[in-house]
Image (cartoon, rainbow, N blue to C red; front, top):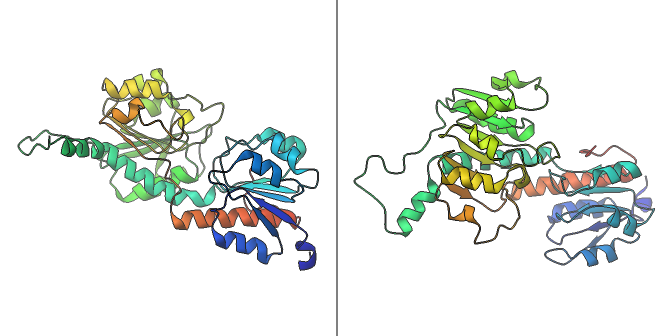
Length: 327
């Protein structure tokens, strides 16, 4: 494709804070970028500006569905998200239209894995409860059994989901002297021997995990998977960490499990809804560490996500497979 031909392509970018290197790359490849300037993005603005574009760089979590595709028009050739999870995308509609759809799962694994380890430690060692004790002048200096936590060392670490993120966490745990790593997925992973990981049933995962990390996407199969019944099967010393999606967890059941000591503690980077209301009951629990969906919030990871998304678009416009197709 000549650079003259490339200049004919218009690309809608739905967020003004997409890293500049990705936008410059698109322009260097001859694309005209039409950037939505609202923060947060306004759907009516997107619907107005999407008309006539050849590709969409979707950098927000609004529903990506037939409404957007129809508004763009028949000349639309490709869409990519700048995210790993695509639970807000009507993938079935994209398949029906045979519209190329990309996303950016591979590059998020390291940033999310680092954060997951942090949540395991923060929740297991009562970081939040300790800070509350300081703020309320309850710091106890003469108690041996004060805020006794759980160590990763000699623990069984369980994963729901053992794809790129789960395996990146497991890789980091190889020098932590864990007892064993177990995981539950629909099918056994061929490379699980690399991490000395054992494939188990969901019930075994619940019963055996000292730390249980949710690192899977939100699907009809995983929605609400951690309910009261699931928490009831877990160890009372279990540290529950979710870096997947909030909808995988019944938050009322989680709140109850934390209150009554059914599980030891929780560390959450994802929840429902997002943003979580400031008066939500989970925020009042000393044994629950909550951070505002920071998994990919590093400069390096965000830049890498943007570049993968930009390459998805260029490849599709040039008639090549996307570097990271969603289906």
